Image: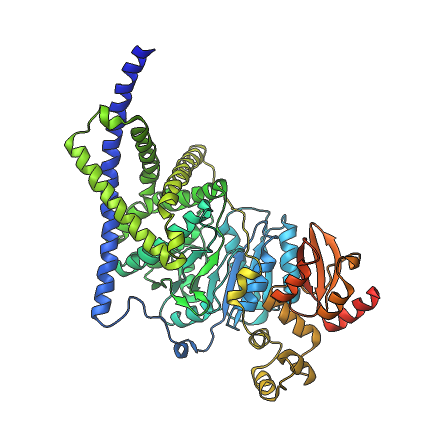
Length: 595
């Protein structure tokens, strides 16, 4: 046994050393590539500063006060019933723009999702459902094309015309001013990309933290440098505004469809197609506003399996299908950025191999047995220096968005990201090769989505009057008059009812949107939990417990629950409390049943 070990260890050491030499050389080249992007970004920043301008000057409030172009927000859906209602309700309440509509596309064999959208159609006049002509899931692009056809039919039927098409997903939190910014930049650009940033989670949520790190760095550094160098801007799939003229030009000159149904990353594909047609593009870098970052926010996968599934689709569509479709065409600027988009095909597996080899060397103390040649040592040292610089840049970008405490664990998450990205790359290569060999299409690898709770959405909460006006429930001049005559002891909603300008039901519909609370008593729910809360608390707080269901205590109230009320209720129950808004009239009827 000792003899075999004596033979195996030197052989393994030599093999590891040879592998490290190759990997170190590649990582050094990749590190110089990343350093070049850093230099480009810094040079662009310095040149702008010397010219007296910031890297990116956001529009002023006066500049944003332009006539509103008609916007269609398209949302492709497959099995999104858990989140789509909350997404529509929250964004309808948060968006500071009046001239827009949601077009949600679903499949005939996904009735729960269709029912959720139909429910919102009944509550919001600017929500429309389009049903694909065939069962799903097909591809996201196929669903988007069906939605676009539905928009055209809607225009033919109503005489409306939509000037901008904006893509979003069912888990998106749209910035309240995003449509206003898109409306502003659409005067000069046919393709406008708002940043996408992951919502912050615990520092120990490593899978989701990888998305936080990568998106913060990519959108703070890479995309501005790419835009400045003249590379095409890939759509992120969400927060992308396409001008109608640009889409129609795409249909005339490139294809009969606005989204490539065979592509798993139709968003990336459209970024290139727009640039190839000479249509102007702009990426808006992350900028902090009074409502948080000017960005589309969302939760990304928080389980490694889901992250690998999603990244497999990204690698397949961007790197492999993009290579298959376009090769290495488009001039040196485009070729350079295409190289950066595809270099993960080599870099991701090699990064994981490097981590494993490093662990082996540390555990076995290989360097004490087998000294590397001087040139290998120099390359390894250079690679280490470049990696340290790379990590410092990433931590700075992450800290800017999430703070230094979160950024401090970015190096650990980078090692974990190597594991996820390597597996996703290998899976993508396997799926793509098998599909090509069999002559089959590639299926839409959809990931499951989640949506923040009510407390996590309060940063985007608009005033009640603003919601009433944007929903068309009250005219702007009526709201102004009501504010001028509002008594000190009456809330604006109550005063509008007193003036006969608003119904009680309409007021509570707007409150439901503003607060993200369900309106009305759930169908079939009876009052059978009345003994859980003291009568005095129910009377003073104007709250009625309905029943306990799924580990929750469902209560109704005509008042928006504040922290004090929730604390008072938790003194009497450990159950999760689910509030339902009801009108004062409904509450009076329910109160009589409890006597």
